[in-house]
Amino acid sequence: MPERDGAQVRERDGTQVGDGVQARDRDRQLVEELLNDRTYHIEFNGHLTNHSKHAVVALAGLGVPGPRIKAYYDNYAKLTTYGYGLEPPKPDRHTITEDNWRQYLGQRTSFWSYCDFFDRRERELGLDEVLRRYVPELLPGWVGAFTHATIHLGWALDIGNRWMAIEGLSYMAFTYVSCHPERATAPATDDVSPVDSLLRLAGEWDERRDELTHWVADVVADTSPVEDGRIHPELLRSGLQFRIARTLDAGHPLIHATPGWLDDGAPPDWEALYYAVTLLYLSKPGDFVLLHLITSLHAVEQIAGRLPADEQGRAVQYFWTGLLGTVFSGGTFPRRHKLAALHGLFESAVDTGADEARQQDWRVIVARAVLEEEEHNPKLAYVLRRVWERGGRRSVYRVAAAQFTATPELPPTFEEPPTE
Image 1 (cartoon, rainbow, N blue to C red):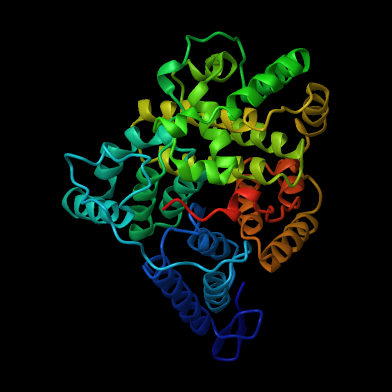
Image 2 (cartoon, rainbow, N blue to C red):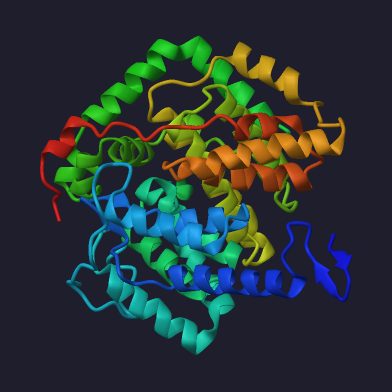
């Protein structure tokens, strides 16, 4: 709280309250300028995502001053953690219109023309109506760009930046990879929560691990969907993105079996989803792939909140299907006994100690996250602190937020030049 010092009102750090307000206003203006920046392409070195604006949202949400955020942004543009700098905008091959915007979904073409298209539509209709009209068709492809397109849109809605939202819509169209919701079966399980579903699936994998591991290996060894145009060749160069796209392209009954908790028509239980996904992450703490399921869930929640009620339920269905396709694509699944043990540890665990002690824990986590060059770590801390604060201070989120990841090594396929 501010303190009185003679005639002046001062913050505890010694700055005048008026100065603090002006500094916050300058920070907000600087963040807005960074999110509105159009200097760089949405990807670099082929299919690697430009994460700079995701980092801006996370760092701003963690309370980092504007100049430090800008320094991170500028340094990232010069040299990302992958060892490459960002690239200038690429020329478009097509002009995107209302008549043809579906034609180029997932074709990784004409990103800036998509931006022009959604920019025009937003000016005509307003952002809420654009989201209502276009997002239901884009969300089945939410895993495209390893979920980063969805993150771009959802995190733009979180911070309230119009241009970043336009980019997010365009990126979702640019990288669309369908999770094939048309394959969903009628509720085939009586799972009452996402954790129940994870435990059931872990049991299936325990019993059928050889069968399922070989199934995944056979699926991802088949590159014919690239040759016949169902999967873009740049994803084959990625390796990881090809595995995910190919697994969803092939489909599996375990991926598409609708759990009971998805069929009751009730509003999405976001807390139950965050808890399940966070347990999944703690089954392999620091795992680069599983971390994305947390940060993309935050994005899907932000997007779903702008949609009609029936579309919100579909958004959760798409998220769950894409989550399973992503996890299955690695050819493994956590052991049931480990997930069950983690569930036993954290199901009822809440941070009930002195508030100052818990806040100090978070200050350390946030301070460490802000020091990380790998921007996925401040994103993890940002999301899980929010969920911790609103969800009854469950210990699982604080523990998981401290499990940082590292930038993965690029696969040998990167020795080949980009296909684009």
